[in-house]
Image (cartoon, rainbow, N blue to C red; front, side, top):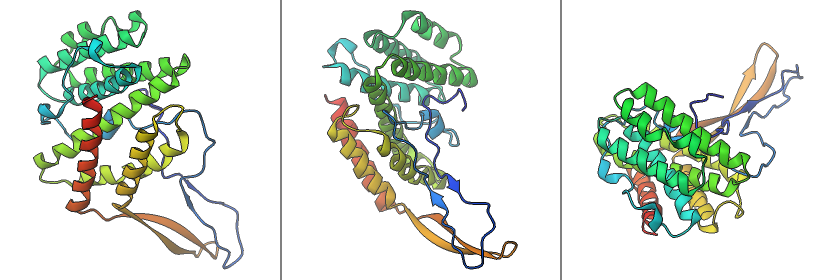
Length: 281
């Protein structure tokens, strides 16, 4: 797995089938989403994976989570989620020319990680590194994604699964919120719409790996509701395929997109509501 990803991304759309020769008319079902053994935490894509194929260099910075004195946050959960949201903001800012903001958000994350008791040795260089490499996107991308990876790995390795999952939740909510609000700046929205539709598969897998021990019931319910909304953007069709070489018939599940502005608007409103509830705590 690439070191440039913050989380150990769940592999989606796993296709499995038997290579064994079968008799005529024997049906083989190709599975989408092969069941995986349940583990104690879930995973979601990093913001770099979410925006990798689309240039979000012209984002509306008023849509980013506003900077706030970390001492004013109410509890550990609030701090963890906000850290994730700021990390998502920093990832998007790395693609822009808003250098001053990039420094400010890097400094904010530095302060948040201190409260989360992340080792000082690993975070002391954040602000200094950002200042020196602020004009180099590739270097900043590596630095930020590596930082996200280190934070996630450290928390999980030290048994702080709840903090890790809450940061993950914050990253994912903020990333999708930014993307949805960036739609108006792009004439060709097909890539973004497809990326959003694929979040159905992301959530379908992620929800198998989480429970109330790592996220509040309200957060899990939000993910379930969003899964259903994203599910309206896709449809699955079972296709009958005849293999003339092996003289067999098997069935393949094909995913197609069914995206409308009304459906996207509905999703946008849901993310806005969730995010507003998070930032107003």
